[in-house]
Length: 338
Ligand code: 13P
Image (cartoon, rainbow, N blue to C red):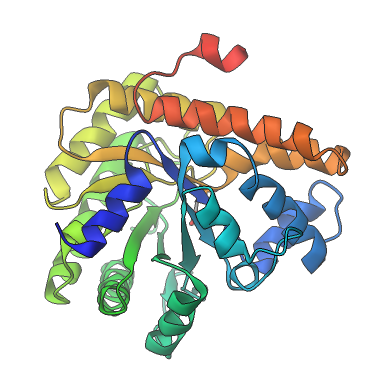
């Protein structure tokens, strides 16, 4: 087994998942301001440190994706943030893209940037303790405008290939995240077709870049109806279509798949993951790499009870526990209510 494969398995095994706490300062500011908390560097650290010191970090969380600001911060216990995460048994990771910018001459599509100088940045992050990384390519569906365009698919998949090669060269595991957004009025079949096209092109580009597939983690979207379609997602259909899309388009060497939540509610993201694992007859480990679906309730509680560390941690512990049960197909609505 390769060293990178070992890291990927350590992050994903035994129902563990990933806490995506890598919101850029801009995104974190929106999240904090939505609950009336000023977005200072101290507040960003305080909330994140509260989560990273929770009891269920040890039981549920195999990896934490950090943002540049956080990986360089020191916790109140004087440990660096990567040390605090490692002490719980989880692996520290880092977002390395610099965001999705407008793709020139496109119909408002985006290209994710961050390749320039990445080799040097990776060395710095490795020295700070990171052992895995994340890069998110973003694809928007518009049936009216025939999006995503071939140009956006090729450009973003190519960037994912180049990024992954640089990360493996630096002895870290790349999370490969091609996200098809939920926005739009498309139906679930269109989401399936677009997700399939994007996975095909992504793995074609990873192979062209000589990326070793047993040393990556795929972070895809679930296959869903567009949020403006007016159609309610049926758990069984979401699970069946998502699993078949992955089985048909993800090479078998990939050790694990960790979904993004992408704006689904915490309940939906958990229920759908549970159903996928209930019917999972593939070799893939299938788990979560949730941002909002792990943090939303804890953030809301914390914003009203900023002194109450234990209460905030209880909310996070419950969410992490529900997601870890779902990653093993052992979740139920009754457990959710307890
Ligand atoms: P969400 O689960 O909130 O979609 O965030 C996951 C993530 O890391 C997006 O890049």
